[in-house]
Length: 263
Image (cartoon, rainbow, N blue to C red; front, side, top):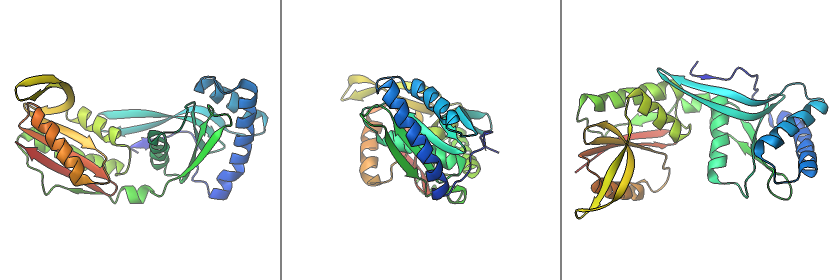
């Protein structure tokens, strides 16, 4: 199994989740009323877990690991709270950001569950956001890789493609882009390198990129809109770097495109 969570987490129905959520929200409000809204995230996590146990919940666990593996690659995520098989992510931020919603949906897809909830203790009243994942395990494994614009320049280029194919076959698509980037970097042994950014012989600074071979890098993204617009900006960056080629892997829902930019 490439994704392992040893703690029981169930794919609850909406009614089952909301039944548990009534208790969780009551305890979350009580926690904030007692502690205020300026404590660290882990403080609320521990206090909420204690209150849920006192309220009669049977299985309440914090910092529950999810381990994602593929070949020599391994990455561990941590679920802040699992309460009778319902999963919660706690925050102490002024307001939610897109990355927070992406984070919990990534967890939901890893666990193959439909419902997961964010709890933010920083506002004047605990702000709960229920997220619903529309992507199940079968959907993730229906992803396809498009290589029509890919051009291999070395054996290591073929290695990149082979590992991408195997990785998607094993984990499926739709998961967070940084997971695939980290995995491909480990599997291809491609270090992150600072490259000099130059315009008209003027050195402007450096930019970090994964280097696959000499003068050949790769870039992983998750653009789902305006792909041509994003490509034009990537092409400009590529033109400023000391590279001959840049392999671009873009995860766009079901479609994963591997293409090559050349000078």
